[in-house]
Image (tube, rainbow, N blue to C red; front, side):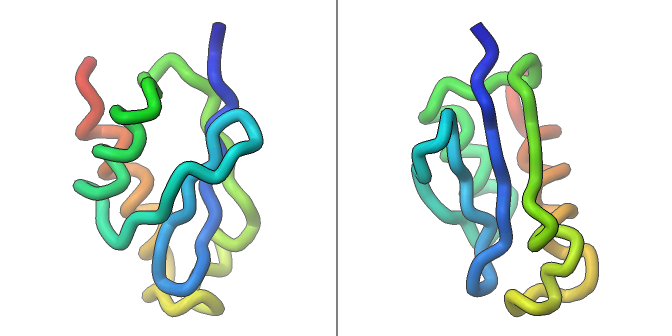
Length: 79
């Protein structure tokens, strides 16, 4: 069964929520990838994001920075 994976931007971190439970925060793609793996997330799961990812500058990121972290972390997941 696919997991509901949700990303949001919060205080210069990407917050990860899995099946409505916040499981951690990451400052970079490597940390986020480790969180994804430790929570059994694969590329086959359903990924969603908060509008805070689109407007991440309000949370201390450079423009588009939070989405880049997410994209890189997903690309680091094993195939």
